[in-house]
Image (tube, rainbow, N blue to C red; front, side, top):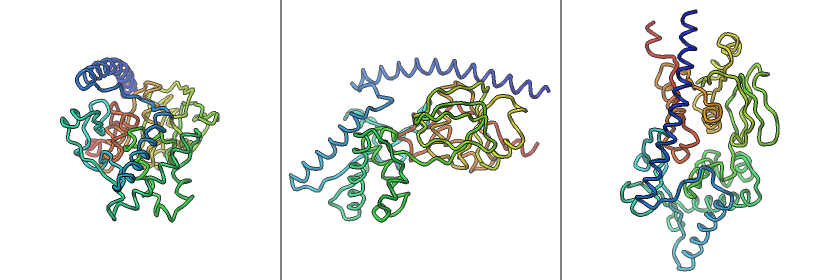
Length: 337
């Protein structure tokens, strides 16, 4: 009984600290952004890039391609390298984040590695063609305000892309090229994560979801950003590493033992939608978020991906990371106990 009381006391403390730190962080972030804009004359970053901006940036790339051809030069696409540590930095609020220099002076202060895909070099010709093709697909999706999954795009022409993984990498490269969140490309990913507990919300297509009514978890939607009307009386969010552990907690009726809470799993290494949902829950409900992972390097790595992000997805760190995530267990010290 004493340990249960201590647990809820810690949860309440975490909640108050989270709300307090969020306010302080917002004030500090506003001050830092103001100083950066004054020093480098940088425009204020947009959280959600409008459809018109995406269209204009695609048209700009195509115009540059046509001008290069007119000059008799091979066209090329250049963007920050997502696979190089020299292109990222660690941010206290957002974890591993891709550095986006906004002008020449910023670039000189932070030497980031660039990736160039050109039609003038044999090994990159196919990738250049695929990127241009996908730009045309994205342009049509954004222009018509429709969405499509990466899997649907792949199966429209599997011989062209070669593999689903190759297409996934190109989509992320285009997000870097246009300097927009991946959701702004109107290309979504099929989800694998599950969620259950004291939570109700409305999906983008108008479907009402009640996570209390499931005995095995509800599959996350592929359009997490379209979720609205979140409602919950939960005291905390529990991120679970494995599906087997997730199902075991449901079988043991965790909600009657710990009270109202939300549990979510990415079934191992989390996909983008699982990470988006964890961040959305924290931002919307302002609840403490705890991680339950194995006490081994792989478990710690998975927790760190939720908490600090990853190098390959560093360009979307603001939407995917949750640095306030706390490690509940299993701790190495628990093994000795």
